[in-house]
Length: 389
Image (cartoon, rainbow, N blue to C red; front, side, top):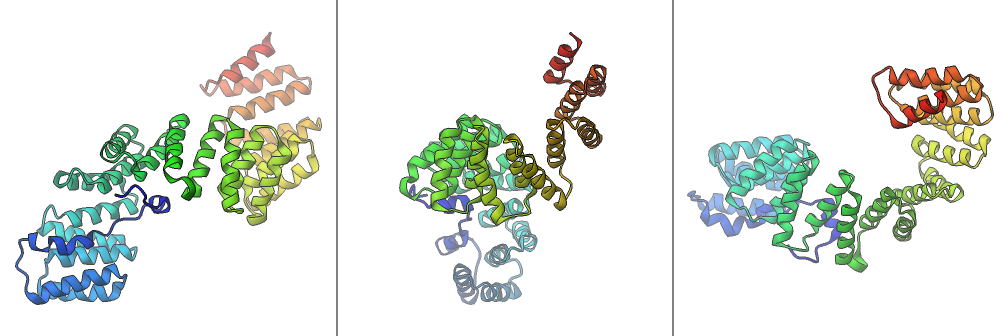
């Protein structure tokens, strides 16, 4: 694999067309083909490469009418179905091929890729490992195996395989991006940042926008918000409506408690997607933190008009509490606790309402209700100790 591969291709995770190797391997099949079958096979694979899938199917069907277990035709039918998105049909063709031609690399690769598309990652891993028994240095397959291990959250094996690829090809973009995703998924943001920055170095001026937003997200998680802003702004310069760049900028400014700046980007997202209730509640939070309570309530209610949202109800309760409407806030918080009895934050807010209302015993009881469930939380315990002392 060339080091100057398009990063967009890497992100799209396109599958190499194995049938392109047909001509070079035809003589190795050990099967006796008539001239007609040989010509039909070549024609079918050429049509497959040209994306003329209906015509390719006709060629492969003609072969199967003559030779029902022809490996090239069965793999060709599988590849055609896979290209059409009919993965379950493709699986049947690949399995049929493997039944009569065990170890056929092209059938194994296609079958594994179908299982991956169907989110059956354990089956995909099993098939790819069978493939690697015949070709343990195939970088394309190794990266697929690492990706599948990542999908089933097997950090150890995923990392091992990605690193094996980098030993074979130190700048392989699939492996570098995979390691970035892997460490991010497991909240190892500093390690994820290392690989995303390495990807940035490799691509330079032709960097994919998703590399920029991934770097920004690492900084966002690490709370190095100012550094994150730089990368999100670069992404936004490339695509002014990019959701991830807008969200990243809004969340970074939120983390820096610059609510006015965060609102600018929350509202830009809402211009595109006015019924996004997550963003509506985030904008409501920003207005509430700026003590613009009417605007905050407006956004929370807009979110609730779409469907019930815990954070919108919580936001309204917090507004009520800030306006000394403790009874209203307590009622809202109690309803939320009934729906989410393990959410410690709700008990803290409820307790605080009782305390501000001058009912200390009720404040203590509210925290005690959380602990009675057998749950433990340091903030709950500290607050309870504070009240008792």
